[in-house]
Length: 83
Image (cartoon, rainbow, N blue to C red; front, top):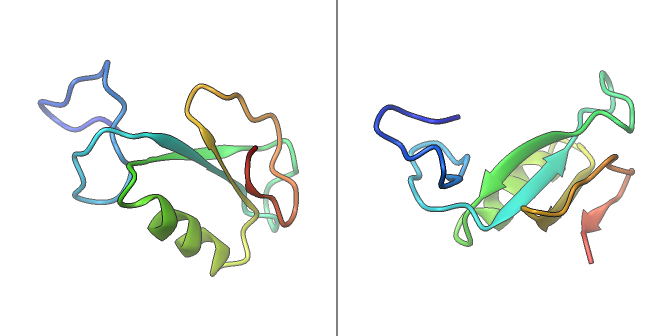
């Protein structure tokens, strides 16, 4: 989400209150309501990468952290880190 005054050309971290540039994509889905090919994406800076991944994993959501320019077409159960 882009806030007022934010530069739309520079992806920003999705962590609430963070204005740092994003460095990775945190791809996830809620398996109770989403099929494997439904991918939701949060962007994360280096500082909040683990926080956002852990937040989703604590809720048993499959998560796959990838480079921002790496398209992810599905998030498998027990995904982890993209290589």
